[in-house]
Image (cartoon, rainbow, N blue to C red; front, side):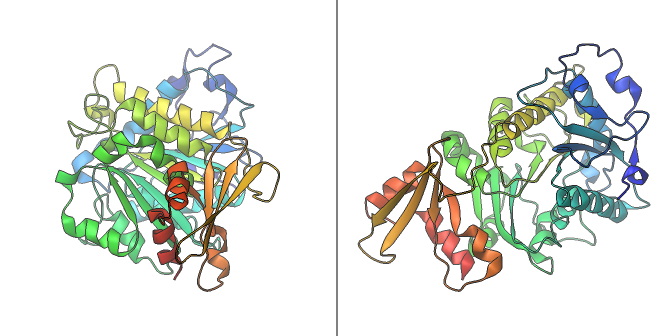
Length: 386
């Protein structure tokens, strides 16, 4: 499929004067005079220039190019880059058409095993990112990083405040898991959290995440797509958002999450939303933070270890006898990365669920089982399989 009809080229002013051969810009192919071919690439950058979905953050349509100005000037990282920048996605006649254009482009890229990195625009585009998986005949897990939980049941259309609600109600349903990271309790009502708990979805508040960031790695490793609203980053580190909060993730913590996400071999799309250069400081600090987050995601991507075959000699298998049902619990540890997985038996054989039988976990889950306790991660995973 020819994607050129959907895109405008990157303005030359964005990369003007970048002569360093070791720069990120000089290591990728950018849509300037002609759009680079996406087939054969590993990663494709997509700029979103639509902010109609968030009236409280008008100006986010200008974010993509400001992020590029910072990203292009970073040094190339590890690996042999096969990265294309497809340019900026042209706006549709209305918000819905803009979202559906993003859906179509992401679906094409994912089908060709090219990972879209979406930059700019507002958080409602998560819905379009999610819909790109609709025809893949599998269930997917969504990782959402945000200070808020956008599950309002309000108004027509998909907006920044209700897009998760639209995802939860979408038919056909192909959402296996939703994990929310870094929400702030005083911004969320208890009824909203109760909805997630009833669906066996997980929400990890900011304070818990900051105290247990390494424990978030298995959750991030289980996601097929990640949506990152920079509202989750505290305003002192990322002021470029009209909804910025005084508390939140640090820039370093945001980069750590992106590093984990990049390492995740399941993850096949990622979006960075809600950056507004009109609200940023004069040095465009927030653009630098987001650019660095993207850099760490790409770095993680090129450090992936292709860990799929649990029957190979690259894994240690541990069988733990339990005092009650289940009789045994099976764990795997990678000799390459020292990461852990566990088997979760499903009550009924269903093809769509088969891929979730072995789920990421942590060493602490194995320790709990060794002490005769069933890990919470095992319980919630099996509940989703019923």
